[in-house]
Image (spheres, rainbow, N blue to C red):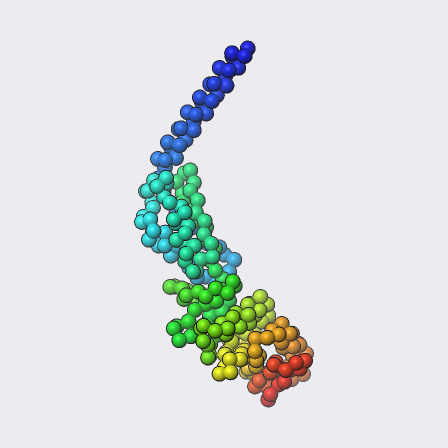
Length: 241
């Protein structure tokens, strides 16, 4: 009985070895027959598309269709995508039936900054992004007296991310303007007034005061009656006709 058990186990081990060798040989002979690009759709602000991703991959490894899957360097391809400033993360997988699956998460811009060199975007993680080749996502814009290498960009980001994270302000505020004093003015989409914000300090409280003005102050007075709404003073909103 013991001898028979040993023979059975020996046969099973031999069978497994043969199967693994066969699978390995077959896997090494599989060629890439298609690319499947999946783009993250968490934001409507597109920066890069599927064809551009394919171009980035082919710039590293040439035409991959027809190439043996075993010769495709996934780490190198992933590194090339992750090095692109418009891509937040990328992962690439091989399937046993010859499909190269590419999953890309784009960065999400919150503000477009106009400056002397043509401009750039700032994303949700405060990264500076170059202008995309094909697309210009519609987000709030920032312009005026902007110096790229000082804290003004950090202040622009603080304002823009607060606006972006609030549905009402994202729909209402169209522009951040930096004046000569390096203070901020906001231009709304609705109404003929300018919102004088001052320094990028006490941001939440200033927007709370502005919201109170929109909800209660403009119930009795048309907001087109004012040319400026000033938020820089504590505990009050000053309106100029």
